[in-house]
Image (cartoon, rainbow, N blue to C red; front, side, top):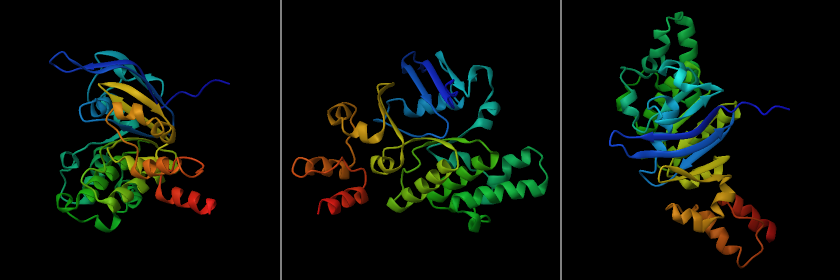
Length: 276
């Protein structure tokens, strides 16, 4: 049986700034359809630059990027945007309309769809992110979480089923992080491919299928979160600590026979109850 074509494939990807220094160094990755992947690493390690290359906002110096088998060098930004939605780190840069509804329907109006189609797609996207009741609000007046969700809805309305997000949890409290991650998890269950950059290790430990750790412009570690978090010495080299609950369970395993390292408080509690 033939292997399915990856949603995204990077082959020997290099990217350099105008200074001539390489920011990405020989990156080889394949992201499968309907995969929920998190990318972590210290500031300046190349995470955002990587997503910009995948989205077409930056172009590789060497190597290539295949989007469902098609080389993005042969695609323009509009072609790539039809397949990939990119929520940037600063949502305000992607907001310019006077109401949430107008923001979400803006690109749809550019397609010259029937008014009923525009309304149907825009309201469906707003419902997916929980903003239908704020459709008439002024986007810049919203809290950060709702501004991110507005950008998110505008992207979803256009129909791409690969979604990339750069630090969607920045400036969010715990509840805001969970709300955004629950939306992403629901989209993932519907078949979307999700790639997100974050420093919130605890949240991605519970949700991500795959964790990529970057260091100095290259992929340093790549695997399932539980497996990656068990390699604490290697993680430390990239300036990353496992989630606090995972570190606690690792300490407890030296004293009591826990089945595995915990990725969430609920998981640790369940294992402790089972032991009792």
